[in-house]
Image 1 (cartoon, one colour):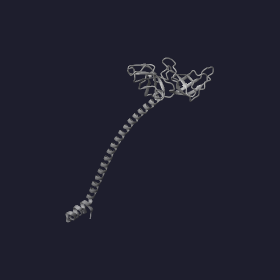
Image 2: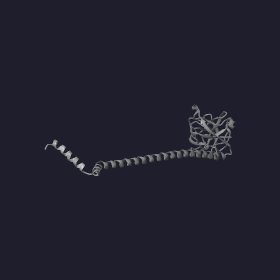
Image 3: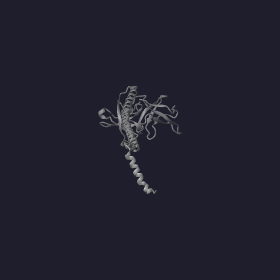
Image 4: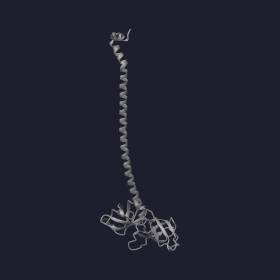
Length: 259
């Protein structure tokens, strides 16, 4: 028998079988063929949905945690800044109290581009009782002197400036001399004869001795810096001595005016 003649017969036999079975069996047959797969698909969709919801919830919790962490870091930064400010003030008070000198705190508010390393501008002036000639210190050492006073700001000539000088003494030997600014090089010492007992590492302190009427703004024994070079040049009667200042004057923020 040819295949084309078998096809109608097979279709008739299949339909006869289907309609001869109970309706429940037909439904069961259909479910077995497609329902199980559909049920499995629905289950997978629910599972994926639940996982997505869990992921969204987790991401939200992470966002909240990150925000809290950022707030804590910001608060921590503020507390550290406040602590540093308090420590700086405490150091300054302890430092200045050793010399029985009253001081006024001031902030560095500017520098001129052409005198960047030689002077600073502070936020205290005439209305605050500031006067030309007053000494200025950090919480560690002498850094300069007031040279110009405005109503609410003043200019401080730094100890790097070639116009700056003051009387000093060597802590180890009590030898006296003068320190002079020498920017862009380190400041140098003068009035130390060739046979002076001076060594690299010697500490340089303020002498408290006035060079002139405007050069006596500091009490004795305040730290200035440390000797970093001692040379004896031929035909020279004095030593060539370089001093590294105790403070890095490029990064000054808070200073104190000696009253």
